Amino acid sequence: MNESLPPGQRDTAAFPRFGLTQFARRFPKETAGRELEIIGNVEHQLHLSDALNGLPRVEQVSDFHCVTTWSRRSLNWGGVRFLDFYESVVVPRACPRPEATLVALRSQDGARTGMLLVDLLAPEVLLADTLEGEPLTVEHGAPLRLVAPAHYAYKSVKYLSRIEFRSEDAGYRASAFRFMDHPRARVTLEERGRGAPGWLLRYLYRPLVPGTVARFAKAMAEHENASGHG
Picture 1 (cartoon, one colour):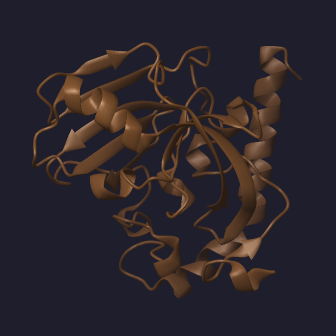
Picture 2: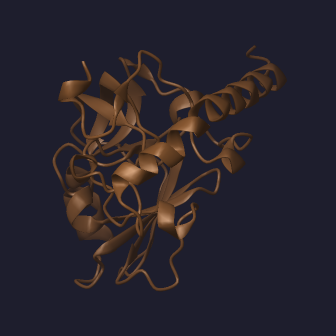
């Protein structure tokens, strides 16, 4: 089974809520709409009340690879290609400047990461609002998240709320420690982080997985109970 996975990954039947532990108890404030801000090195900043409105929808089946070495295969995502959103909304209305080649992505819960624009424009990168034919749940990123299958999942921001175009990474800081945040994070090249080979980071991350899964599951259950959904 693992032979068809990227280097160092292990297949799992589960799809846990997962991330940096400081975000386990952070949840989106707004889940009813698909609001999105476009800011930064653009001619015009945008506040979109429904970022996907009027754009062609797609569904795709893709694998999801966590940098900590677990993978969940064949998830069915639905939404709008980032490429279509960029060409139909961002370019004509926000007018990014030519030097804006880095895109900082921010979540409603405060999480931050960044991707090169060239990677975001790959045809399989989605602004997703459904999973397995159903609206996204809070557990997996409602109301809107990025899905970038060719990259480790820390690039696929949940609760996406802000897209900032930048000309360089000066002044930009991801949520994780710098060594944990590779500029591209491509799974086929095992770009887990920087300053250490990917194969070494496998052995640092794997022991952390069970405790992190448990911590996020407990926080999710408490959130649902407090919200009256438990």
